[in-house]
Amino acid sequence: MTDRRESDGAGDGDGRSADPIPRAGRRRRVFQQGRLVLGPDRLVACEVTDVSTAGARLRVPARIALPEAFALVIAADDLRTVAVRLRWRRGDFAGVTFEGAGVYVG
Image (cartoon, rainbow, N blue to C red; front, side):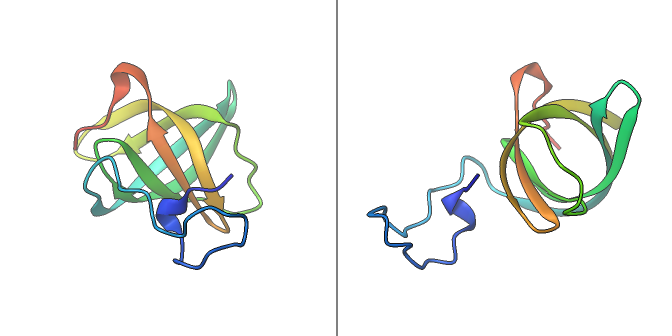
């Protein structure tokens, strides 16, 4: 999975432009604890490092396989659970977009 918004600007020779895609919303740097809900009895700790109205960047160990869609619990001023979809994954970082009525607003 790739998301050119996280591109280093170098073309990869497949004919696509190396220009990044504009973001859907402005990112805000945060450090919040989170939990990935990967099954009925499986929660995995993560850190939410950036958030916008459209999605978030997560730090989660690379050894943890992530499904295409899952629930994310974010511990901010209150506890929020949002449905997310995996957009990209590089090492210990993953980008997700918020789905449905559970959009995170701050």
